[in-house]
Image (tube, rainbow, N blue to C red; front, top):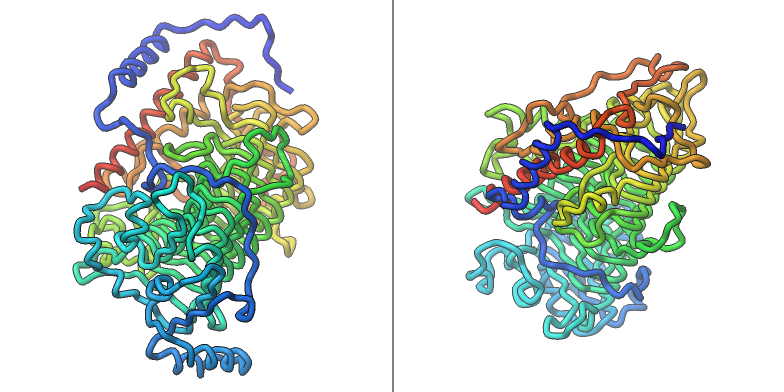
Length: 603
């Protein structure tokens, strides 16, 4: 275990002080356009719900207080093609009760809590929501909750808004509480909510279905596709389930949940999304005072039994707090998963208490940057959305992340246990530090170490498939050496192999976790160039190799004694001052990237 002498004297070189001064002046005086950090998505100021809700349970037709049926003109024809006789009969009975052609019309017709809406097979475009009169005065920008209530169609095809905007809380208190919407096909794509494009090639809408302050919301057996942002969106909601769903070909997410609690996302197929397939951002920070790493007894959202593939990122969560992610397949994405404290504007920073267990995380090497972003004539450089080719499987990564990585942790108290991780060509897992306190406007150097601490990587099976094939990761673990309380223990490899990593000596075990909060300067500076990625203005940042396809590891990788290590910061003079300088420099890069994105979106 590497230790630091208590009486260590550190010399601060003049050039480091000069750099630090320049960066401090730039931040204090304000660099034009860099007033706020980047955000994963633009949203109104949001808060966590009270947290006294529960995860809703599926309700039968007989248990519902009311039943509303939605169908299309060709639903009967589609029903006849269903293979199950029992399912055909159920749909035919519902068809006789159909009164609405559009989902939003059905939502607007709800008069009682605990209503079930059944959506019969068909493709739903929701044309009345495209250009409603109430949206005439909307000129873009953040949509406050009162506008969601009065005219959710400004950004959503279907809106479920459960709270009175005039009361002081965010609790659901109207007839839309405990609403359940269920597709009645044999599979999710039998009931498809499709956004798509207008005649001028622009997106029809930002979101497919948005449940906003809709406590007890339950959605099942539907596909959402081709939206500017998200197929499904749950916001400021206490108690929700989205299960048996497919979300694909969206510019950002298959599903987004934000500042919500008591959720379950399950049995999904999330693919071809430009940010991630599944994104529980700013999940309720229910373990913020918990100093145990895991497993958890209380979590804000459970994500399970999902097939997450062919996205820029499989799973992501800015301030992805108290997420229980288990029994999923996360594969053939650009990168597998990330929970992080990087992007600003998210309640619950820094991220804490993710629980990743029994997932299969493999072959996350699909390089959408090289395929669709790099080059003046690349598909993602097209400014007309329809011409990009989202509908044909083109994926335009929203951010720059390391292709070939199984998972990234940038937070605290995350428990990564008993996952099967193989064939990720850059690295299996990556743990590193970022300066979120600075991005929040806190420039106290002592506050800059609020991540990544107390993370445990245990009992993971590395570098071989469930069939026993030796398919190594580039390295199994990347660590920038920052943080206290981090540990790696009881991770397994194929026979004759060893765990590979980029640390000079053995990684700290959980009996003797890391103790030095400051990371390796060399490793930290290597991450900075990638912060300036922008799809249009800087698609291939100089000095950033994250967006390059890493070489496929040979089956000999991981042989006994193999490890890649970088020099340790402990051996470097002037480390703390250099660290602060790098902190500020990296933050400037991130803020610059955010400013460019905002300027582009406003154009």
